[in-house]
Image (cartoon, rainbow, N blue to C red):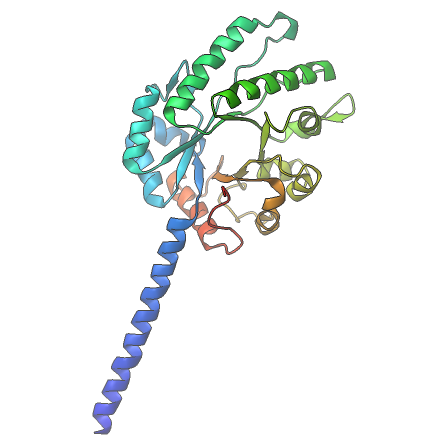
Length: 296
């Protein structure tokens, strides 16, 4: 009788352990499927060029919700029509969120051909809308030599943003570290934020480059609340590995920033790029300070 009770007890404990384990796995899977995390495809630059289809399938298999692209030219994405590009993403369940592309003014701004500029924009906006993009982002501009040059770009971005708004697309600017340099005693990024219309231009803060410049992302959230609609979530290599970025503070203050979408990006890797993107994805999934969705 004692042996039989012992056996029943072992079976019961084992069953409870299995149920608990399965529940934990279910919770983790559910959490992964609910968190909206996007990937900048620049992180997989060589993989994409080697095999686009296999790479986006791998991105979807990791669990990413969608992508931000860098390869737009003359109405095409990765040498594909917007329709075909969107179809390929739809087939693997990825959302085409945003695109990094730029049409700079002439080196001597006074020589800018504005007819050419707006023709470029008409084509770009049409292509991005057909592809289902929500955002067009300037990844950088030529380093301005004077405040007059910088103001010209601010005026240009306001006009571009107005044009994008008319098509239901948002226009923004992405920073590196050099935007924290000064022109005539003005910090470039601060000047751009102050001299662009929030209704027409948002900013995509790259949190890694901000920290590398010796600045605090959270301080910028507080000084310019609501201006950072997209964030590039980035570290020296995989997220959380360097210990220098302070992701907990960033995410705990993200509502001040006005952020709607978070986008993982990497320039350097400890593993293969795809393995690295899996490590960074898992970091965000496992981080309790990261909410499921910021778009609402």
